[in-house]
Length: 630
Image (cartoon, rainbow, N blue to C red; front, top):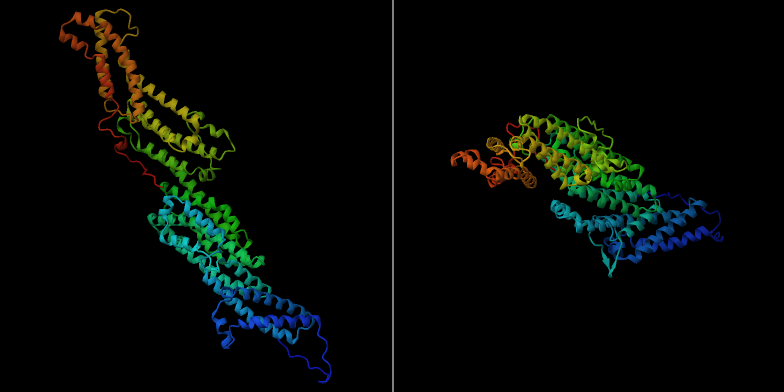
């Protein structure tokens, strides 16, 4: 080991042996005292001392086995260094400096061993008072069942290591960090800071690398990622998501705390140490999301993994800035920000593809005017998106919406959009726009039915389904009550159009004034028209569908009020006229229905032929969509 001072031969005195020795200077006296005090304790713990008396000291640990002497040892080294600095100013060739430097090398060798031993013996222990350990313990105790289920055995092992209890002596807890800092302070003061830092870096870097590996963090290159099947890559993403919070908030944050504490005496050393230990691993950690964002096989269904990655980094951003606040670790902050930007670009591309896919959907209409698969898919997708309102607001913040629609602006916007400072406003407008794109597409599909009443029933059913998904999800808060009210009114309008056009022949077959007197021939004609109109409407609509039970009952009640009530009044007023003018067979051919029969017929409508809400599918569908996953 090389010290600061080199020996030189002492100058020979020109005085004879009988001449009195020159008086000692203050510095020499101080050095002599320091040498005497330091020599006794330093040589007692000399690793190279071959005497039997030192065999115990050779195999023992000073800071673990004799803490009182450990303090004396450190104090002696510091005092010796101070004395050496005073003496060297007067005489750099002093024999005392040679003795002191030899003694210092012995001491530093012992301190290096102690430093290395403490680090090796506490690889996964960041001090009993460590914030990181406490935070990890708290997170583990409050984690959801789903989070706990996703942890593998390696993660549990890391938890046990990080929450390990400090060594105790005589019932008192000993701070390992304090010992490391005492040694580091001493070595830095003695001019051996570089050697101390190298020992520390070698040990702690291996801890970081090993722990991240156990957490499931791997080093990939972009070519490997591009060749992966999505199922394989998705498993890697899930592993990364389950590990990143522990990696940043516990492991790297704890390492930063430990580094700051151990090397508190030197800003330069603590920065260089932490950078050397954590930078490469952190770069690998935050490069992975960027590589996923560049995955060439990204599709609409993969949106939610992109959002998961973006959200994970976004939530940890303040901690990332704090932990990697040094200039030398700025590259880590830059990489994390770059990953977020690439994920943002990928999410925007997917959103654009999603909107384009809605517009280009060529699947045919479903039988009976039921819920179209496109409606189900889009609304399920938007419900998932609404759970990511935070990330989505950042992603679409400056993403333009080209509102080219035949529908009025009030049909699109929600009251939230009036608040320009609200982050929810951006998400609200974007989601409302996507729903509008869907409704416009459905409006076009409705024309393929070739039956206007059925087209309106189709539109009412699908818009009602849209509203039901909004009410039962976060979309309700994002779109607002006014948006809901506007669209509820639209459902009512569609239904009124259906009832008016679908049952017009039935309703117009009866006189407008039911109390006015009409001739028997006119009575017979009204009954005949009603019979033909009702039979035709019932036969046609027997395969039509209203999937929502509440809406179905409301429509039946409304039709009954209009049709059954009017028919009952006409029937009761004119039944005798028909019965008097003809025989029994003729009467039955004219009056085919009694009022209660109509009620029964209406109650059988809107279930469809073999209809099931969950089995409603399109015939000859060529939809580009598949079920969304997250």
